[in-house]
Length: 114
Image 1 (spheres, one colour):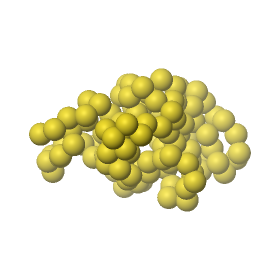
Image 2 (cartoon, rainbow, N blue to C red):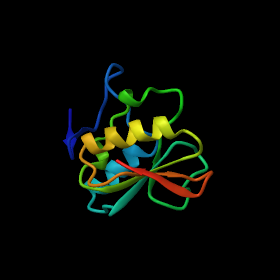
Image 3 (cartoon, rainbow, N blue to C red):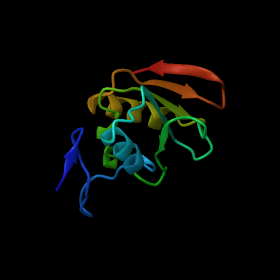
Image 4 (cartoon, helix red, strand yellow):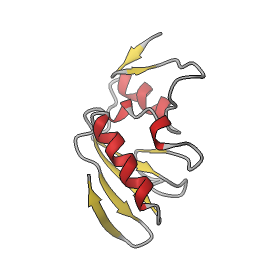
C-alpha cells in the first residue's frame, strides 16, 4: 500500500474511512497543491465554497481517518451538534491538526477551541 502524509492511499474494508473529499484532498497535497486550512463540515451544505471534507452523521467519530489534517489549521462547522463537533475536533488534533476550533453555523458563533 502507498502512503502519503501518514495516510494509506488504498484502504481495506476493515480500516478507518477518509471523509468525503478526503481522497481528492490527499491527491492535491501529493501533487503539491496544499491548502493552508481546512473546514471539516458535519453537514453537506456547510462550507461549500471552501476547502473542506464532510463527515456523515452515520459514522462514529472514532471511525474517521483524519490523517489528512496533519499540519493544517482546521475548523469544525456544525449546526446544533456540539458534542460530536468537539469529539471530532479532539480527533483532528490527535491526528496532527495545528488548531481546530468549533463553529456552530446555526448560532453564528465560535463555541469552543479544542
